[in-house]
Structure formats: structure tokens, C-alpha cells
Image 1 (cartoon, rainbow, N blue to C red):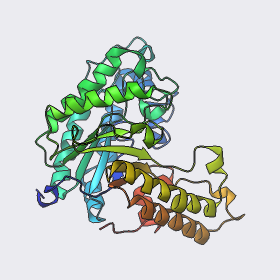
Image 2 (image 1 turned 60 degrees about the vertical axis):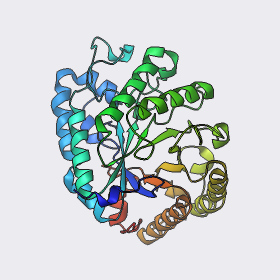
Image 3 (image 1 turned 90 degrees about the horizontal axis):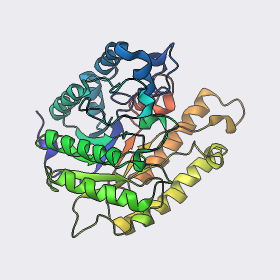
Image 4 (image 1 turned 90 degrees about the vertical axis):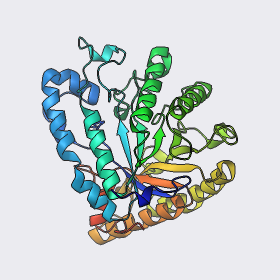
Length: 363
């Protein structure tokens, strides 16, 4: 077990990768798992397959990411992994949602054993783990990555909110003594129109739930910005009352029309000017305590020069990668989304490294 890497975790620079679509599946990342199904997310996958879901998902868990992948990640010098987990990770005691239909508890049980193995591998290889509560009952954002697409009701029922808090506390209690546990993230990407005060109350409650089991010097508490300005969190969960708290921001240039229409020079300009200035301002506001918990090379190359060839594609991705890394190095850490996909090389860390778009060493 490589314990040297886990000394002095407070304020440690993390350079990481997400293990997306492993314990929370997303159809666009692993379409083969959804072959022949109408399902669009993990909820509908489990509801549609019923009893057959267990065999399919357990095979996926055991093959999509293995110890060999952890070893490959560690060999690049990456020192951290962010692991998205579903609220169903501890089994069948979660509140019902109508999307489950006639199945009271549709989700497959057993993911916690996979997570235990992830800690074993991470500690053997010296990788820090950020546990990310990626879904909440009722869904916190209406995205497939929240578990139920086109539904956003987590914030509307207290039992949904309470259950999410209980999962965070159970994660903290289970892994409190594991050297690899670096941080617990309270909730991934709650939607922009959920009331900020509700999110602040939830994140404050989450802090105290986690701190019941995890000391500040051992484990950071991370909260997502909820797609709003960091200025809405000025002074929130900061010293001297709160310790080792980081804000998580996600940075992409491929989801809104003004970004989609940029050429490569526009993408680079936004990265090295707008996002660099933003990083300086956030660091002035919150000190060093910010992670870019998700970013990728996902941009639309069709607006680049017509008939872009392989060499120009490589130059474009290398430039976009290098400028993002230069900006994100200003923060406490960053995590590429994601380690592995079936169909999207610009979203696949391993493929991007192999193609020379990303560096092959990160230390």
C-alpha cells in the first residue's frame, strides 16, 4: 500500500480524471450497454430490464473499469480520481419516485462492493479519491447523469433531500479511515433554477453530516456551484467556522450556441483570457479552494477550417488541451471528464493521451 502519497492531504494539488459511467451509467458514453433498449438513463435502464438489469450492470461494473485502469492512470502521474456514485449505492432503502413504475426499488444492489475495491486499488497505487454524489432522489438537474432525464424534483421533497444527506453521512462513516479518501462532494450539478438558499442549507447540513465522521485535516468537503456565479457563495462555508471546503466548477465550451459556434481561436481566447481572469477572481474570493471537477476536449470542429485533416485536428485538440490545463493549474485541482468512453475520443482521457492530444505525463 502506497501511504506516502496520502501524507499532508490538506490543500494538496490534485490532477485527476473522472470515472464516469461506471457506477452511474450514461447512455452517450456507453451506448452498447443500452443496445435494443428504450432506456435513456440508469433509472429507465433498471426499470425496463427488471431482473435482467443485475447481470448486465454487474458485468459492466467488473469490466468497464478494473485495477489495470487504475494502474494506467497512476502511471501517467495523475494523482486523483473523482468517482460518481448514485444515491442507491447502499441498497434498497431510498424513497420512491413515480419513474420507478411498479418497481419499488429498481436499482441494482452491489455497487458498494465495487467502490470498496476502488479504494483498495487507489491505496495500492497512491491515488486520491473524491467521492461525488452524482444523483439524488427525484433528480437534481433533469439530466441523464442525475439518474432521471427531464425530471428535476429533488429539491421539492424533504425526504429526497434528507436521503441524499444520509448517503453522504454513510459514505463518510464507511470510508473515514481509508487513506485514499480525499474529499466528498455533496451533490453534482444541482440545476441553476434551484433556490440558492436551499442549496446553501443543504450544503451546510452536508458539511456537518460529513464532519461527524471525517476530520478537516483528513477529508475535504466539496460543493458544486449549481451553475451560478461564485459570487453567490462569497463567504459561504469559509474559515474560521468551516475548514477544508472547496467549491467545484465545471467548464465546457460545447453546450450553448455561442460556444458551439466558436472556431478554435475563439475557444482558446475564451480559455486563456475569460477563464484565466475568472480563475484569478475566484482565487481572490475563495483563496485556493476551487476544483474544476469536470472539463473535456469536447468542441465542434466543424466550424474550424473546412475539411480539417488529421494533423489539424491534432493541433486543434492539443492547443485546446494545453490552454485549459494552463488555466486550471491556477486552481487547487482539476478532473478531466471522463477516463473512458466508447464513442467520443475528445471526452475520453485515455484515448486523448494515446492520440497525443493530452500530455502523457502529469507530474
